[in-house]
Image (cartoon, rainbow, N blue to C red; front, side):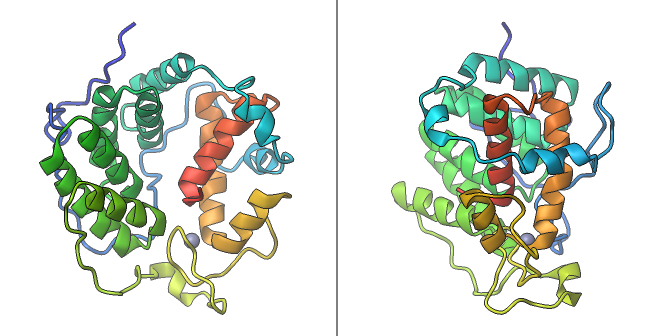
Length: 277
Ligand SMILES: [Zn+2]
C-alpha cells in the first residue's frame, strides 16, 4: 500500500528530506481563530452543513470509560487509522486537519520520516498552526535534523506566543531546551483579542486556546470531568468554533458515534482543537 503523502509541489517548495518550513509571509495581524475554515469543503455524500445538530449531540455523549479504552479493546489499529487518514488527504490535500491527524498517527506508529511532510503540508495551508510546528520539530529532532528543528521550533514558539497558545508554547520551549538551543525571548504581550475585545471580560479568566479574557460558556458543554475542564479553560467563542469543526470531523471521518473508538477519536480531535491535554 502506498503510504507516502505526496505534497502538492506548488505549495511551499514540496517535501525535502529535511522538511524545511518557511512560513509564508502573511500580514502580522491574524484573526484570533486557531483554524481557518476557508478550505472547508463539504464531503461528497455528507450533508455539507457545518452546524448540523449531530456534533452538539455527539459532544453530549456521556464520558467514555478511559480505562476500557486504554486496554486497547476499542482502539483502532494504527494501520487502519493511517489508511483512513491517507484516504482523506488524497481526497482533499488542503484539509489541514486530516493532514495533521495523518502526521500524528504516523508519528505515533514510529514513522517520523513519513510524518514530516504531513506537518509541513499543514503549515503550508495554515502557517499559524502552532501545534504543527511543535510536531514538525519533534519529527526533525527524531530524524536528526537539529538545525531545522531549531528553526521550526523558534518560529513556532513565536507564533504560539502571539496567539496565546500556551501548551504548544511550553512544549516547544522544552523541545528547544532538550536539544541545547535557546528559547526565544518574547515580550509579555498577550494575543490580540481582535473581534473578541468588544465582549465583556470575565474576571480572572483567560481562554487557553485563544487567550481572550472571555466570555466563558454559561455552563459546562457536557457532563463529566472533561466538560468541567472545557468550561473552566475555554471561552464560548472557541467552543462554538469547535462545534462547527466537530461536525466536519464526524462527516469526514464517517465516525459512527455509537462506537467507543469513534468517540475516542472525536474527543482526541476536540482536545487537540481546544488545546487540552
Ligand atoms: Zn477562546
